[in-house]
Image 1: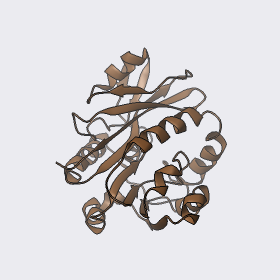
Image 2: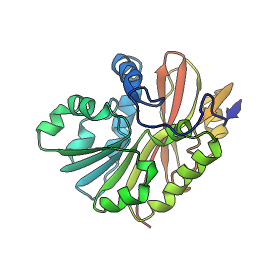
Image 3: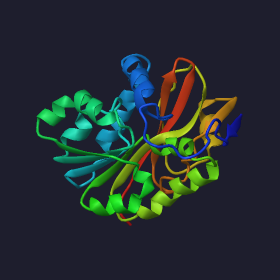
Image 4: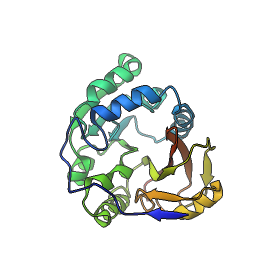
Length: 244
């Protein structure tokens, strides 16, 4: 097996666009067609993970939720106030439609169309009473940089910024060609991407999304296999952290 760290076809930072490489209309069309087909096992595993995450706050800050295509309504209903930050200009309208039920039942949603990573400290300071959930966004940062090392450093820096917060994240760890249906995997602490592949018995070339250093080293985590396409598998890492 091999891990590929270099991103292809990335010329520099991306501005918000309906044709954004990690969002926009093409992404939403794919999600609409796939969420009730081969995304179902991933959605069920993600719902289980999110229901196990129980921060004490009644307020939630969502980072990069897009339309919440894979997020269960139950992940929102236990929060009275939800604020979302997403670079995708299409996301808010679709999110409100996908999650109309909890919004009707009293979950108050506010939204900012912005790039959280442009000034993360200011966003976090504006919502000091909120638990924080990164919604499969960290693994996309490498597509917003011309050099993978810049994206990796940006992702790794988040842990320090979040040290005094209740936060969780699910994010792409690795992706590659695979048509198998694999079960979730529980891990007691951080491991190497190659170790995860060996535990699943996977070979070949795998794309490294540079998120291995996002969660604290000793935080337990799950690997949630996501059949993104019929022949492409994303290994999504999910875990949470408490203030230190």
